[in-house]
Image (cartoon, rainbow, N blue to C red; front, side, top):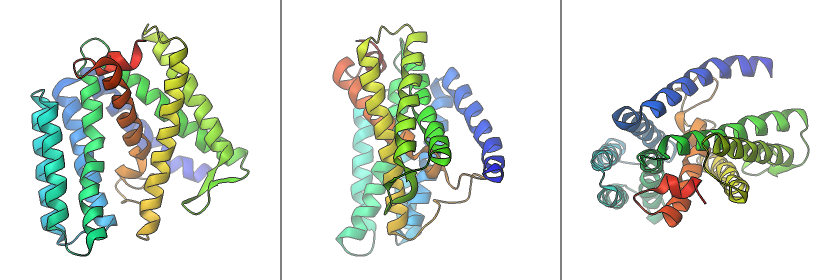
Length: 272
C-alpha cells in the first residue's frame, strides 16, 4: 500500500493543483483544460475498444470534440450538443465491424464529451459557477479518497466482484459518507442556502460518481484492459482518474438544468 501511495500522491497533487488553478481562472483556460482531457479520454477509449480504422475514427472524433468546444466557448450549448451527437453518429458509421462495434465507437464520443461539456456549462454560470465546480470536486474527490481507504482498511464483501474485484461495500459506504460531508461543507462555504437538499443531491452525485467508476471498469474488463493508458504514474490513464467525475458532472448538470435552466445551471444545482 505504501509503495502504491508513493506512486499516486505526487501526480495526484499536481493534477489537483492544476485543476484548482484553471477552475479559479475560468474562461478559456478552464475550457482548454477539460477539452484536452476529453481528447485524451477519446484516444484512450478508441484504444480500449479497438476502433477501426483507428486513425480515421480517432480523427473524426477529435474534430467533433474540438468543434463542440469552440461552440461551447461561444456560449452555444445547443449547437455544441448537436456537434457531439453528429460526431458520434459519424464515428459509428465510419467504424468497421458489426453493430455492437460501431455502437462502442460512437458511444465513446458521447462519453468523451461528458468530460468537458457539463463542467464548462456549470462553470460559465456567473454567480455560482466557481462554487459549483469546487462543490463537485469536493464530492467526487472525497468519495474517491474515502472509498479507497475504507476499502483498504475495512475490506469486507465485494461491491461488484465481476466488474471491479477490489471495490467493497465498506468503501462504497465510506466514500458516500465523506462525499456527502464534502458536498454539504462546500455548499455551506459558498453560502448556497442548500438546506436538506444538500444532503440529497450530494448523496446522488456521490453514488453516480461510484457508478461511473464501475462502468469504466466494466468497459476495460470487457475488452481485456487493465488501465486506460499509462499516461499518469500510479493512476493509469486520464479516464482511470476522472471516470467518477465524468458521470458526477453529468448528473450535476442535469439537476442544475432542471432547476435553474440553461442560463444558470450552477445556481440551480446549489440554491434551493
